[in-house]
Amino acid sequence: MKTIYLLLVRSQTCLSRTIHALTGDSYTHVSIAFDGALTTLCSFARFDACCPLPAGLVREQPAAGYYGAHPEIPCALLAVPVSEAGYARARAHAEAMLARQDATARRAYRYSVLGLLACRAGLPLRRSGRYFCSQFVSKLLALTGDVALPGPPELMRPQELAQLPEAVCLWRGTMGALAARCAQPSLTEAASRRMMEREENHPCKREVPQYDLQNLWFRRA
Image (tube, rainbow, N blue to C red; front, side):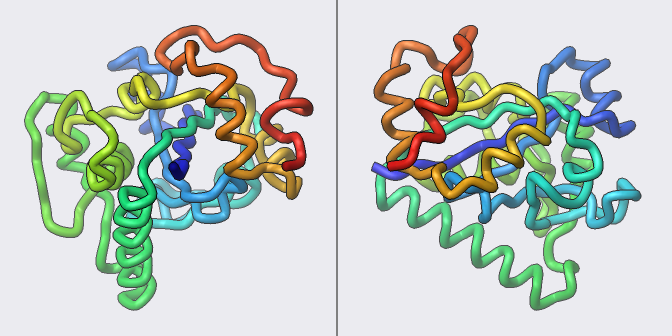
């Protein structure tokens, strides 16, 4: 088995506040990573930390960009176990998209504002080269063949990904605290697997107890 990581956040941007006001969701943005240290973190978000647009497919860092400037942002880190073949498919697809984005000076994949509005209206809208964050992440999870999404990627919200029965919550806190932990070399897939084995009765859709993170998730393998 392999692990895919989902980082959910709720920032204080105008878009995030609007989504929270309309839905009441605890989290309004989601990113995906293929390693526990989150060095492969990516999503559809703003290109510039100071401006909401333009936006599109970007690499993200917990300690840089918008997150670095706002360490107080609440976040949750989830682990989703998948098969090795499913992990390879999802990661290869994400890397191919990122490579194309780099080769086209960020023109290949742009943020789908219309798709986000259609999602709110319950209308799935698929546009070539256009995604919003949870649509992108949901598409990659669907590619694994191991995650049962409750709906099509075009209608998935970050909050719904937080409630996937396959997901286990590894962390709830602030982005600044998470960034400090990720800077330690002790976050490994094996450690995450031990966490999932210990807490298999506590999927993220339930209330997650407080963990001794020094002795569990961040313990050296």
